[in-house]
Image (cartoon, rainbow, N blue to C red; front, top):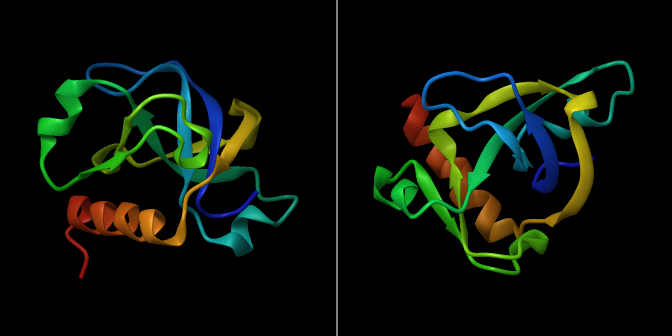
Length: 115
């Protein structure tokens, strides 16, 4: 498991406007955490195919169909970055290109007001 990998994840239970159910997520946690066998948590950004998410501004990143094995055009919802137990991850779909991962990083930075 590496930063930029896209996995299916079970995002339940959730509440309110949080993304829920089974959906793809992007691993954004540092590889030193991701590759430590006794470190059970990973930090992820959920992915959605909702057109409504595209209106959310600079905290969403467009992911074209085919990127990291995604079947449909999608968006990374960087303002919903969250931590999951690795047990909630299932099949790996693929990995984002370094350029697209950089865009996701920028979306997370914007959402968290980091320089």
